[in-house]
Image 1 (tube, rainbow, N blue to C red):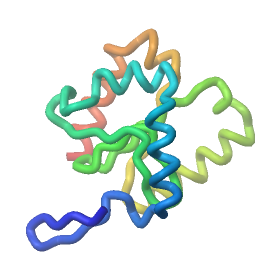
Image 2 (cartoon, helix red, strand yellow; image 1 turned 135 degrees about the vertical axis):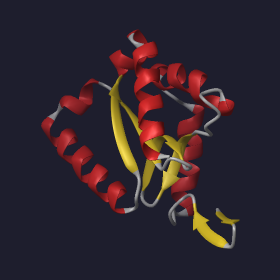
Image 3 (cartoon, one colour; image 1 turned 90 degrees about the vertical axis):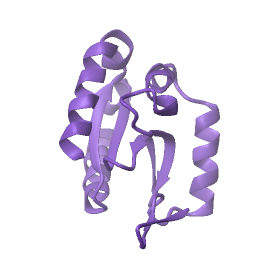
Image 4 (spheres, one colour; image 1 turned 180 degrees about the vertical axis):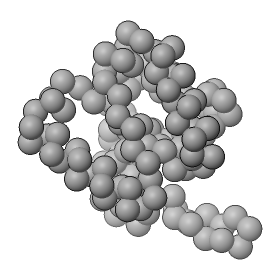
Length: 131
């Protein structure tokens, strides 16, 4: 999807393939409980007026939550992300997304489900830092 704003074109999906867009759609239909908790707070510009997208395709990745205005990606990580192989893959993914100008912040399922108010304060700080 290419948008034009003030004669500047930008692609909010960073060239994601049609196949990846379809996979993102499937993921939106099957969100985890932790993702649903955070989405309830972010959807529909409910959080400080910022527009977030869930399961958003970008380049060759699907981002859990993405705010294009702040170029902020929030990844909700479950226990498997503590695994060394998964952790290495996460670091590489973060590096590649940063090369696209996207800031990646990771939160745990526990933070999201049990400390949602603290998490929202962090997100507000991240948004203010990026805009």
